[in-house]
Image (cartoon, rainbow, N blue to C red; front, side, top):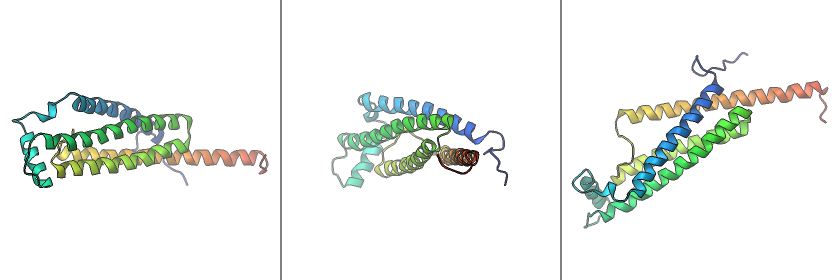
Amino acid sequence: MATNPCCCCCIFAKTGALLIGCLNIVASLRKVMQISWELFDGNSHLESGSENAVLNVTLGQVDGLVNTGVENVSKPYEVVLAVELFLNVLNIIFAVILVHGIRKEQPCLVKANLIFSILFFGLSLILRISGIFLGVKISFSRDSSEIIANLARAYFIYVVYCAYMEIRVGTLQGMAGRERGNGGSKT
């Protein structure tokens, strides 16, 4: 049975996975810088007279608090951003592992990235949903582009899976060829 090594009829799965790994590194570095700026900039997210006034009331209603001041917003906002920062740092590490695994054709490294990508995707969705319920505006937009971005991320996971299967099959075929070359005996 012949398999098509291309996942989108124009780029090989391994090449696509390499591109995805490089794009993940660049995008996560940008996100880390953006989140770090928001966390360590000081009070940029606590300015009064902006949309954060609505955020304060929403958070006060959710927690049943009488005082809906700025001090109530700071903690959940910083916690959500800190978790998002941590996940993006992990995403950089696993993207580097993906690139290395593809280049050295080591399926276990690609599989590690694949598992993390699925977990990262799920945790990001949970963070975004919890941010909406807390009334916290995270560094993303809530329009149709977010849906498109999540669909693209799901497709990227599929491309990495295709590359993993291609490397895994190649590794298994290489092992079978070596066994045949030795006459079937293990040395």
